[in-house]
Length: 469
Image (cartoon, rainbow, N blue to C red; front, side, top):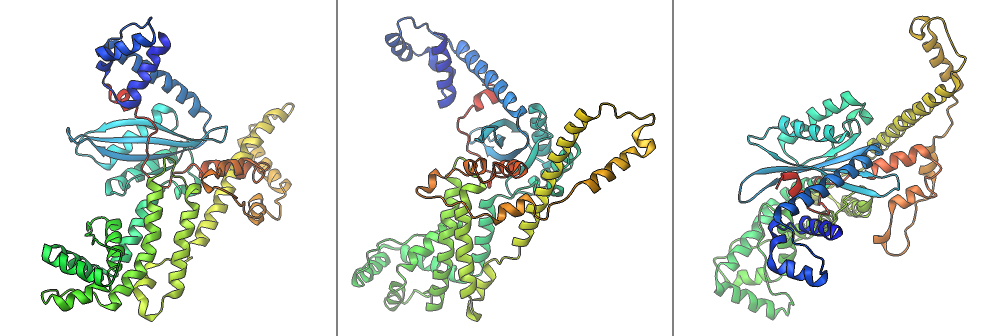
C-alpha cells in the first residue's frame, strides 16, 4: 500500500491531476479490483504524499548539485491565461560525474508587477543561494528584453563577487540562438521589404473574392501545376512569411497571366522580385529547419546543433561568394568569418583559466602533503617568502612548446558513422579523444552543457509543489 501511494502521488504530479481525484469512486473501484488490500486515500493524504515526494526529490537534487563544479542557467517567463499572473521558471543544466547531461527545474516563482530587471535578478540569485550554487554559475540565458539586460548586469556583478567569472565574464550571458537567428532573418527580410509587400498584397488581392480565386485556379490548371493553395503570412512571424514566399514562388508564372485578366490587380511582382525572393528563401529554408530543431529538442545544447550551424554557415558562405554588384541585398545579409578568430582566442583564454584553476588546486594539495618541516620564524607576508616561492614556481615550471589544446585541435575530427541521432558527444569527450587530457575534459564537460536557447522544456511538471497547491 505504501508503494501504491507513492505511485499515486507520482501519477498526480506527472499528469497535473487534482488531489481530489484520489477520492473518486471509479478510481478506488479500479484500485480495489487490482489490489484487494487497497485503502482509500483522501485529498489531504494525496497532497501530503505529493509534498513528501517533492521534499525527497529536493534532497536528492541537493546531493547531486554538491558534486557539480559549474552549472548553466536558463530562465523563461510564463503568463497564466486566466489569472494574468506572471511566473519565471529557472532551470539548471550540467553534466554529472557519470558524463550524463542533466537538466533540473530549480524554481517556479511568481513575480509581482510591476516587473523590473532588479526583481528578476533578485529572484534568480535567491534561487541559487537556496540551492548553494551561487559560486558555481557558469552561464545564463534569458529572453531578449531590456529588463533582462538589467538583470544580467546585476547578476554578473553579484556572482563575480563570489567567484571569478571565466573570460572576464564575457561568457556569462549566452544569447539565445533562436533569437540570433531571428535577428539575422529579420535583417535579411528588411532588404527585400518591397518585394514581400508586393507578394503579400498579391495574395490578399486574390483571396479577397471567390471569383478571383476561381480565375487564379483556372490559370493554375492551364499550366498543369500540381499546387492549389496560396498562403497569407502573419507579419510578426518570419517563418510564416517564409512559408508565404515559398508557396508563392510555386505560382510565379501564374501571377503575370492573372494580371492580364484582372485590370484591378496592380501589385504583380516583377521577374527581379521573384529572383530576390527565391534567393532569400534558399537561406530561410535552412534557418527555418534549424529553428524547428532547436525548439523540438528537450536538451538544446551546442553539440546537438553543430550540424545545423554548419548548414547555416554553408548557405551563407555560398551566397556570399555568389553575391555580385546586383545582389547587394544578399551581400548585406550574410555574415563573414571575422569573428572566428575571436572565438578561437576565447577558447584559448578559457583553456588557460581552467589550467590555472586546476593546477592551483593540485599545488595546494601538494603543499599540504610536503609542508612538514618547512617552518619559518617570520610570516610569509613580512619575510618575502611568498614572493620567493612564487618566483621559484615560475622558473621551475617549464611551459611546453605546445599545449594540450594545441595537440587536441591538431587531431583528426571524430567521424560519426550511421545514425546521427545516436551520436553521443559526451561519450566522445569521455573516451579516447579527451580522456587523458584532464583540463580539456573538464572544460568540455562544462561548455557542452550550456544551452543554446533560453527556452527550457521540463521533463515533468512538478510545478504544483512549487506553487503550494
